[in-house]
Amino acid sequence: MKKIMAVNAGSSSLKFQLLNMPMKGEGKEEEVLIEGLFERIGLDYAQITIKFKPDGINLVKETKRVDLRDHATAVKILIETLIAKGIVSSIDEIDGVGHRVVHGGENFKDSAIIDEAVIKEIERISDLAPLHNPANLIGIKAFRKILPNVVQVVVFDTSFHQTMPAESYMYAVPYEWYEKYGVRKYGFHGTSHKYVAMQAAKYLKRPLEELKLITAHIGNGGSLAAIKQGKCVDTSMGFTPLAGIPMGTRSGSIDPAIIEFIAKKENLDIHEITSILNKKSGYIGIYKESSDARDLRDAQEAGNQLADLVINMQNKSICDFISSYYGYMGGLDAIIFTAGIGEKSPQTREEICDRLSEAFGVYIDKELNKIKGEFLDLSLPHSKVKVLVIPTNEELMIALDVMRLGYGQTQI
Ligand code: ADP
Image (cartoon, rainbow, N blue to C red; front, side, top):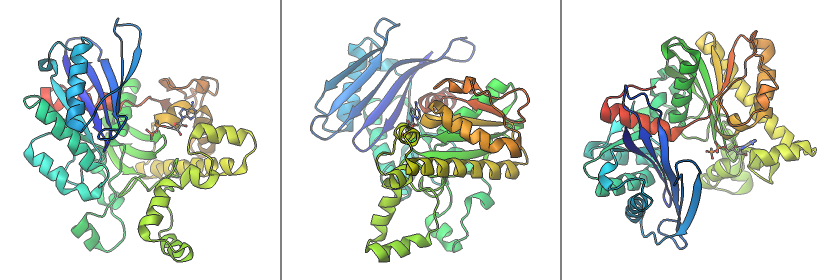
């Protein structure tokens, strides 16, 4: 077994999971040893929350105030905590670290072992994700300082989508925008789309290379991917995560001419409008009271028409993408629901499958569909398309990539 740390660093936070990962032939399952979150790094009232099983059975959650000057301090406290809790006896027991990085641009078509050149390239493309990549890099640098001899890998949200053909990823705008600035569709949530696609192939007992899949990652943010023969051929998010379906706070794709129109009407600049499209649109833009799907469902049940409207808008948009990908791939073996809403909202799954049943012969077991947050095969025997619910696990996918690139272990 190898102890692998999966890390997701934000500008003031650091989420981690330490997994025990089996080597090929060991016949063991991977296991989460501890997971946690540092919050408010560099600010007052910083804290660490950890979840682990001191007796190997019962999960315990502990939250503690800590003085967190910077990310390096958080990593130092993290290592001390692992030792204090008996998760590792020394720092040398950590065999690898995997870091989530949001944007990999065009050059990272796969995860990569971190070296100076990789760090430089992530820095170079940082203007594609100015809020995220610099924060991810702070985490990488902090871990490299404390664990200089341990293999470290970067896993990008974008790289799984790098197999898209140009006809899918190009925008019909002046070509120089692509050449000079890299304006194209990149797609996001790639780690999740890849993980659930791999799990689906495993469950269906067919090689991924034979399958046509649509993965629907529907959480607070949401995107769909068309995966043909193991390769992403289209996805709904774009140059940024703003494109695609309406989401919790994001508009999804809109007519770009609206931006100039509203700029004039409301006397706003482009930055302010982009912020509204990212933070005050989608569920919250239409319903106003909340961006949480559970609140919208409660409101819908109580007869709120705006909650009902935006839920239907999202459902329609999801079905538009599924229909278009079905046609583009020339068929479909399975639809996979994942992320918060995809895993835990039976209503959303049922409504989407109902919309698809007449055209595509999608039929699900509505009783079974009531289960939340578990792996499910919802398809009825006569359904022409399989419908699966697969809980996503981005930390595990990151750890699997560390095992693949760092230790030559083939995946799943
Ligand atoms: P993020 O994009 O922030 O990672 P998640 O994948 O955690 O988002 O999904 C969050 C969304 O999932 C929220 O809209 C939340 O309301 C929704 N969700 C969580 N549990 C349920 C549930 N039991 N029923 C319906 N929606 C749920």
